Image (cartoon, rainbow, N blue to C red; front, top):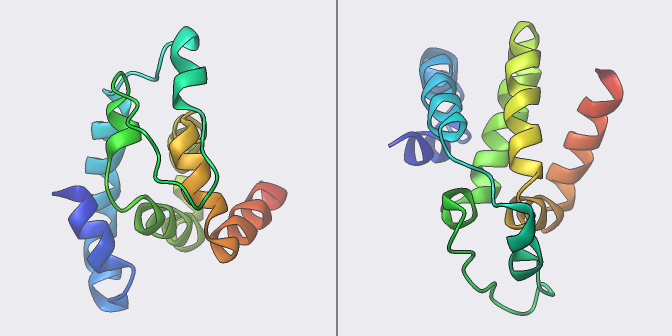
Length: 123
């Protein structure tokens, strides 16, 4: 549910204003309960070149979440729009950045990577 809503909210500013807090709360809760991949599994989860489809990282539910770029877009938009929630957003971003597939998704969109770097600079 929350990933689908995030995808819609990044393109509909009016809905974003009304529904983004609830969507963020659900996304935060859902990802907080997901374990990160154990350190010994990290090599099997390393990002592949962009031209290759990534192999599944079976021990990380975060790795298999769909629409990663849209979720990144939502999180960065949310952080820009709700600076008072910056701590919680930063916590979620840190968790996603600990998962190689999420880093790969961020790197695949230079516009998102620039926004992410700019927000890191401001915090």
